[in-house]
Amino acid sequence: GQQVMQIPQYQHVQEGEDFTTYCNSSTTLSNIQWYKQRPGGHPVFLIQLVKSGEVKKQKRLTFQFGEAKKNSSLHITATQTTDVGTYFCAGPGETSGSRLTFGEGTQLTVNP
Amino acid sequence: GAVVSQHPSWVICKSGTSVKIECRSLDFQATTMFWYRQFPKQSLMLMATSNEGSKATYEQGVEKDKFLINHASLTLSTLTVTSAHPEDSSFYICSASRSSSSYNSPLHFGNGTRLTVT
Image (cartoon, chains in turn orange, brown):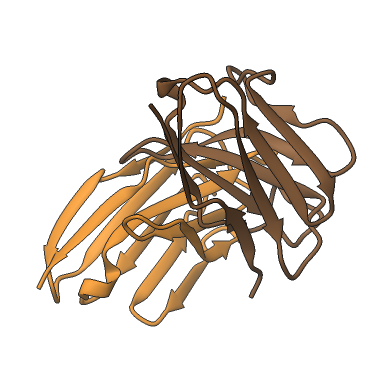
């Protein structure tokens, strides 16, 4: 079945440093979604990318969808303590009715 | 934005009892809702897809008689953990999509229910 892998599993940064998490799927995705889960909280939708090679920005966050639609990345510029949490990528396969498969997540901690 | 409400937020129960968790979409109709389970520091595991007016679709390895799902209306789905045991202790989260094409659309998650079975 479809597998979605994320690296790294954990990332510790100093406030102000940049952060990147990478997402790779074993199959081609119809779209890629990113979610953020704060400690003790629930996942919150951040963004959806649909087109091959698409790049979207949300303030300090930059999201990319690979040309082959099998990988994606999330880059945070100049991290802040409010960025702390676990970032999940998720994507359905291109087959009709494919379920959303979540990656294992990257847990980000930011030291002030 | 869309709001999904989940209740209760946490519950402690004795082994052998049943627990019901409610998931409501507050400002939109959800023909499909999804139930996830999450262990500490792990990803979200899809348990089942709840379909309004029909039987839920369970993922492989999830016992349908153990985790009863009822989608009584377009705004309410319930998950009942029957005869709970300590190994059922986990974080259960429901989600719903505004779109009828739920499999491709972004999900709105409830706050989750932390179940502890003693």
